[in-house]
Length: 103
Length: 234
Image 1 (spheres, rainbow over the protein chains, first blue to last red):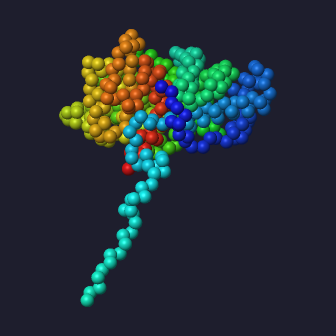
Image 2: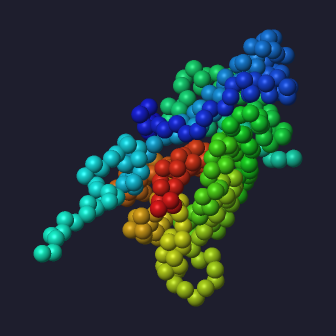
Image 3: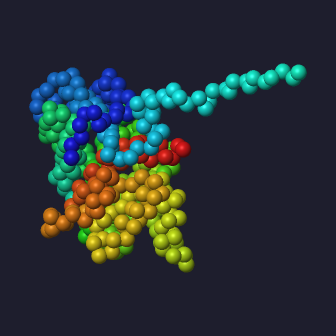
């Protein structure tokens, strides 16, 4: 069953497109070479296209599907929605007890 | 020379991309461009001849591994790995309990394939009855489930020996996250072996090991981050 778009979570940071393009240019990449030699594409255009496709694929892998049908641990649920229990005073330092002065 | 052709790798890449597209993780336009021969066939060429395609600057790597079908024949599998997952998941030092029917072909090939797929993440496989101990099998299973971080169960050929569902029940009680590999026999498409009580849990439906491992490889990192890591951190 296909997932809805609200059922994704993006993990990590996408690679730097400039660095990918630089590596494709310097390493005589076989995909770029094929585009240039067989389809007569300009080198710059071929590099940009291959970088875009590879980064698109990387983005798909970084877009992790959520499994909402599963029972999620309580702690994670709270983290996801930024849940704060305002009534939970357990960490607050208890107020000093008022004691009656000895007479 | 390997007993597979470039078209096997092409089919495998196509299946992985289709799975991503069905999950709506890649749109129609990108899917069409990725499946163009100029892109798709060259990656398959590289995987066929060199076994990998990698760029240092890219967060992804493509690796060809050989897996085994239920009849023992080898087939190539394109494992597309996110480098972040490769850096983070091994640090968790995870152990997975694998439950399945104890017949030679399943024991041999399912374990072999799982070991190949989980190896890059440093996940250790544990099984019941590994040691020739005098301990009863059920208590050994309980012990192994307790030491595992998650479990993978396969229901293939369990109609007459449904032990795997007992193990699933034990995992539920132990609150152990698990994935059920749900085998569907192509000759009996109407037969649904999964008990309805388990319908809400993560199941990977498959007809052969190729379809199983394509989907499992794509879903496993998400499953680990969402279900296994929060429990591991407690």
